[in-house]
Length: 504
Image 1 (tube, rainbow, N blue to C red):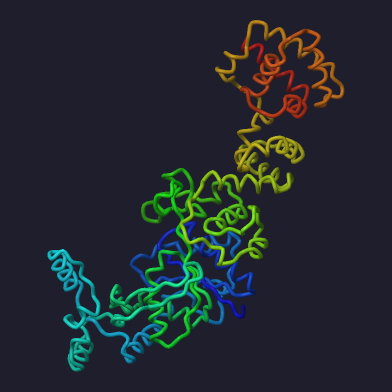
Image 2 (cartoon, rainbow, N blue to C red):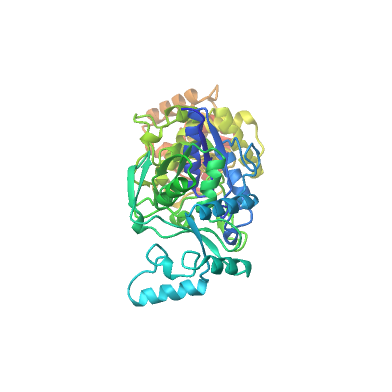
C-alpha cells in the first residue's frame, strides 16, 4: 500500500475521551504498518465550544500513550498550519467554487426564520427539513433572482452557504468496516458548509483539509457515519478522489446499554480520560488513567482490543506487535463493551512483565513521598514478595506497609478469632526460639518453628496466625518466615513482645 497518510482530527472542546484515543491508536497502527504518515489536525472551527487547555491536553494524552505524530501543530509539516482556525481563508474559496459549479447556494434565512418554520412544522406533526422540497420556498439564491442575491450580499445581510443535495439519487459508499452503504438523497438535508461568522462547518473544512493534506484513509468513529453521504457527495462535487473510509464501532458502557460517554467516568468508578482533567470553568476534577496508576503500554493494549481482535488467543501485545498484527479488516462492526476489570487485568500483566528493579524504583518514589527512607535493595526484596498480588504500583503499599512500620493496633475481628488464653505463653516461647536461629533466614526459621510446634503438639494454624497478627496487625501478608527474615530478628521479637503486652 503506497503513500498511506492518515489523520486524527479532534476538536478542543474538552478532555479527550478514551474513544478518541482509540481512534488515534488505530490510525497510528495503520500508518506505521504501511510505513505511512500520522497527522494531528486540530479542528477548532466551532469557536463557541472551544475550551482553554483542551488542545494541550490532547497532545499530552497522545504523547503519554506513545502515539507519535509525524505532522501537526507542534511538529509542523508541508501542509501547515494544522489548526483549522488558522486556515479559514482557505475554505471560503472552496465554498464559492461549489456555488459556481451549482453544488451550493447562499441562504439568507435568519435563525428566527428557521425557528418559526420548525414550530410551524411541529404544529402539523412533521419535522422541518431544509432540502429539495423546501429550499425553493425559502430565502436563498435558488429562490431569489441574481440581483436579489447580489443586493442581499452587498448590503451586508448575513448568510450561510448550504450544500445543494442532489434530488432523487443514491449515494453508494464503501467502508472497510461496514462494507457497501447505500443512502437515498431524499433522506438528507442541505447542510450548512460555511457559517455567517466567516468560518466553515466541520463538513467543508474536513473535506478540504483531507484533500489538501493528501489523506489516503479516513479512520474515525461510528458517530460520523451519518455524515458520510454528504462527504462523498462533496468529493464528487469537487471532482476529487475520496479517501478510503473506515468507521469504528462505538465504545459501550460495561452493561452494553448505550455509548460510554464523558459523563460516565467517575460516576461508574473508572476513568474515561487518559489523563486527569480539571474543568477550567467549574474546577470539576475527572480522573485519568495515568494518575490512576496505569502503564501507558497496558492502556494502549487494552484500547486496541476494544473493537479489534488479532484472530488468535494472544492478548498481550507490545506496540510493535500491535503494529504488525493490526488490520482494519479485523475491526468489528458491533459496539465494544468496556470492561473495567479487564482493564485492571491488563495493567496487572504489564506490572508482572516489568523488571523487579523498575517496579521497586517506582515504589521507592512512593515511599519517599510518605517520608520513609530505606535502601533500594530492601525495597526490591519487599516488592518481589508482593508484586503478584496487586494491579498497580501504588497498591503495593497496602500489601507491604508492615515491612516499613510496626503495627500500632490490631484487627479486632482477627484478635477475637486468633488470640486465646494460651496464646501469650506460646508467643513467649517463640521469642526464645527465634533468638537461637542461626542463620536467621526463611528456611531455618520455618524449620525451627515447625519442629517446635510438632514437639509441643500445638495447633499449627492457631500459632502461625497469632504470630502474623502481631507482626502485621491483621491476617494478611506473604509467608511468615519471609516477613521475619526481612524485618530482621530484632524487629520481629520486638513486635511479638509488644503484642503480648498490648493483648495480654
